[in-house]
Amino acid sequence: SFSVVIYNVQDTSASLIVRIKNIYIKARRCGQVVRVNSGAAVPRVFKLEILVTLTLQFLRKNCIIFIRNWICYTVYSLHTCCTYTCPCWENHEYARFRNTIIMASQEFEEAIVLALDQRTPFLKNIGNDIWEYHELGFKEHKSSNLLANALEKEGFKVQKNVAGLDTAFKATFGSGSPHIAFLCEYDALPEIGHACGHNLIAEAGLAAGIGLKSAMVQASLPGTVSVFGTPAEEGGGGKVIMIEKGCFEGVDVAMMVHPTSYNDAVPTVLARRAIKIVYKGKESHAAMAPWEGVNALDAAVLAYTSISTLRQQMKPSWRVHGIITRGGVKPNIIPGMTEMHYYIRTPNEKDMEVLYKKCTNCFQSAAIATGCEVEIQKLAPSYSNMVTNMEMVSTFVKILKGLNISMDLQPTDHITGSTDMGNISHVVPSIHPMYSIGTAVNHTKEFAQLGNTPHSHQVTLLVGKAMALTGLSVLTDKKLLEKIKEEFKRQSIDSEY
Image (cartoon, rainbow, N blue to C red; front, side):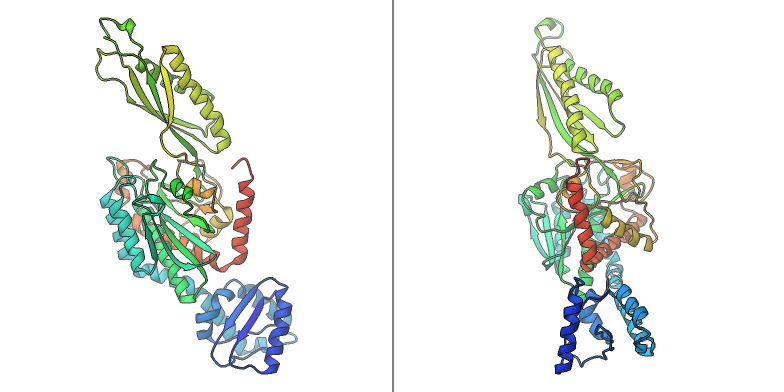
């Protein structure tokens, strides 16, 4: 119930060195190390099996990171186990020490909250500006530069144009492990703007990065915090490209949040394949010689109808939807070419293989029935299903509750669609909680209006704080990080994921 304590103080008397050495040898067996470094005078040492300091300045500057997740259990254990032999634990000095520890352990959480409270107008303006820009995927130049420049001013080292993408960036502070990543999205939808709230996603990710960095500076915490700018989530798969280019190598955990009409800590996010189906027939005059033609529109209509008929045999969690993007040029010309775009979605890759085969059978049979040729092409990068790390999201939910937002860890009946954050979750332990900003449904004009209200910004900054505090927990709790990684390994070998 105690950890290694190493004193580096001015008092180098032989008795103190022997005492430290003996405690180090004993405590090393417990597997944790608490390094205490000070140039100040030797603080009072209780005659227990562990050395402690009473200096608030000492704790603030050097020690709190190590004591934070250790003191609540360990000091209490030493107190209850050693009171009968060490009455000094009951005296005023112990009370001061205990209260100092508790106050200091809360101080870094307060540093995050204070840093973000002070920047509230600035962060809201960032979200508002991105909402006003409403740039489409891979064209988010203003939004990307706005975020990257803001992070650079906050002391992050910024790399632009990462993974060969003009509007992707990586902003980093610190070095080594643990490496905490927060992800920003900022692409809008055609015609209806930020109807999926990506301006708020960017605002929350920016807030989380700045908040955690503030605590790291105050406590001299080891580790790394990165904020990734990930373009073109709406179909372009910016994160997929960044994964392929190795952008997330060395990252220990990844987090982002997403606005919607309800709270859901463990959203059902489907795998998705986006395909283009092209039918090639033969043009002919529709009145003079229709028999000379091979109608590619008939093939498209037949394929569309076949998919609709297939729905009776689809699982409730499967989704297939498409449009005819090219159906001909004039009514009196039999279409010689038609084109369709389809999305196929399932809860996991195992189901995807089954449903994809069923759909391609529909597309191919329509070609055979009409005498057309068919080509099935990849329309965009494939998105993987989201695998939520329960250890990490449990920490997030507990912290969020302290901010007066409730989320249930039990999966809901909501199916949210697909995102390239799912791909991230297959290479790095990840969370992607959904939070409510109102009652409108995503991808509507009504939701776009919700994305730039005082209420939506207020809630967004609260979940941004929760992400930053979750990152702090991962940085300062070695056991939590180990549990997160162990769960990720289990999920990686489970075929259901």
